[in-house]
Amino acid sequence: GAGVSQTPSNKVTEKGKYVELRCDPISGHTALYWYRQSLGQGPEFLIYFQGTGAADDSGLPNDRFFAVRPEGSVSTLKIQRTERGDSAVYLCASSSRGWRTDTQYFGPGTRLTVL
Amino acid sequence: QQQVKQSPQSLIVQKGGIPIINCAYENTAFDYFPWYQQFPGKGPALLIAIRPDVSEKKEGRFTISFNKSAKQFSLHIMDSQPGDSATYFCAASIEIQGAQKLVFGQGTRLTINP
Image 1 (cartoon, rainbow over the protein chains, first blue to last red):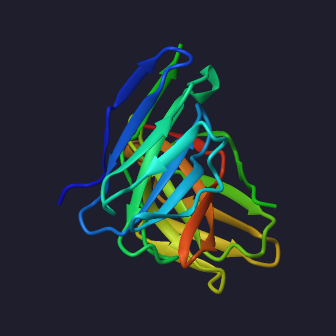
Image 2 (spheres, each protein chain N blue to C red; image 1 turned 180 degrees about the horizontal axis):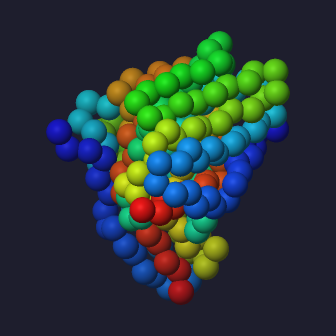
C-alpha cells in the first residue's frame, strides 16, 4: 500500500515568508508525528497528533511554528516569518494507533531552504 | 537527560566485515530502543528494535546488544554488504500519552566497500 507522502519535496523561500508543508499519513493511521532533521543530524521531534488533537507540541521551537490536522488524516506544518535557521528537512511519520511499540513510518521529507 | 549519544560519526568497513555502532543514554524513563536506516533522499526506516528487559535481539544479519546497567546499546551488522551503506540512527523512546516520543542519536554514516 501507499506509504507516507509529503509535499512539496523541495521548498525554497525567502526570509520572512510564510510556508506550509503537507503530510499524508498511511490510511487509517491515527498517530502522526513531525520531525525536523538538520544536515548531518538525527531527526528532532516537533509535534505529535493523536487523531485531530495535538497531544504533545513541546518540540515546536517557537510560536512561528504551528501544525494542524483538522480531520485526523492530512496534517499541515505552518511556519511564519521564516528564518535562515529554519532550513532543514521536515519529516512526517505515522503509526497505526500511536502505541509505544508501534512502528513509525516516515515519509521522504520536505527539504526547506530559506534564502 | 533527553540526549542519545551515538558513535562513531562515520565508519568504513570492507564487505563481509562486522560494523558496530554504539549508543548511550541517560534518561532511565526511556523504554524502547529502535534503530533506523536512512538512504539519501529517503526518510528513516525501522530496522530493528529492542525493549530494555532483553539483552540481545537478532533479526537476520542485524543484532542489537543492550546493557541496561550501563545505559548503552549497540547495533552489529553481520556479513555486511555494499547495499548496507546508509546512515544509521539509534533512538530511544519515552511515552507521551501512550505513544512514542523518539529521541534520535546524531547518526552514523556507514560505508561498506566491495
